[in-house]
Amino acid sequence: MTPVELPYVPILLNETFITALWDTGAEKSFISEVYRNYFSYRPRQKTKDRVVTAQGTPCSHLGLFSDQPGLTHVVYHEIDTGDKGPVVSRPYKYDRVKQGIIDYHIDKMLRDGTICPINSPYASPVVLTRKNNDLPPDSPEAYRFAIDYRKLNAITKYPRYPLPVIDDLLTNIPHTNVMSTLDLRSGYFQLAISPKDIEKTAFITRNGTFAFLRMPFGLSGAAPNFQRAIDIILQPVIGRFVSVYMDDVIITSPSFKDHLDHLT
Image 1 (cartoon, rainbow, N blue to C red):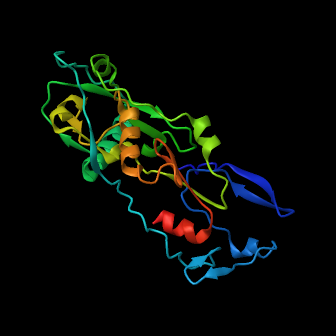
Image 2: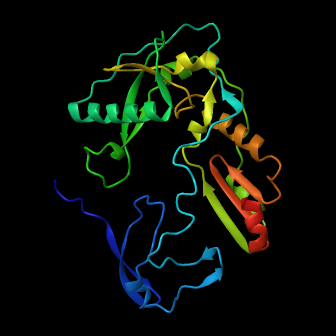
Image 3: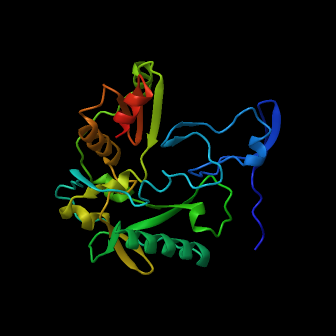
């Protein structure tokens, strides 16, 4: 296998040039002690349970959050098609490599409980879109798995719900000493599809027909429905120390002690 050329760039840190890897979507970053010795920074333990830098030993908080998305039932995603009949499309044609990538994503979602096999009068086709990354074209993670729901969306009615105005959110964030930002993992997949509408999410592949148990991207009303759910869940703290836009949450506090309380 030909090695992937990674996007290394030189950066100046504390008047010292080092080679850094461009953001590849990694969730955790560490600095080697070899490079640390070139800087004026030294590891400091501020409290017994809060270490500023890693020293080659595992961080106690890594793995604190599950890789599997949660599931809330405060809001179900409904697909109101009125008296319109089922919509049907043939599966799009893909070559052997891309078909293997589709199979990979389907197997993963079956294991995660995101989708299930189904007999449904509805059928929408699968779409693979290339992500903006440097992975090889035969890598499953190089593509975003999606469904072409245009026919279904054309007959769907959904209740409107206001999305926050980003400029207003940024203007109203209080000037505080401590801030954390959270990006919810697989946010849409944490909302359940209404049981009566699961069959409408059906998508067709060479290996059969499957339906979503959790809300996927691409459905009409998905964005406002997700915002409504997150507003309901965080309603007691929104405006006090939490600001939220879709799956992005900002938490601000006047002190680190208060911040720990707010985070928990």
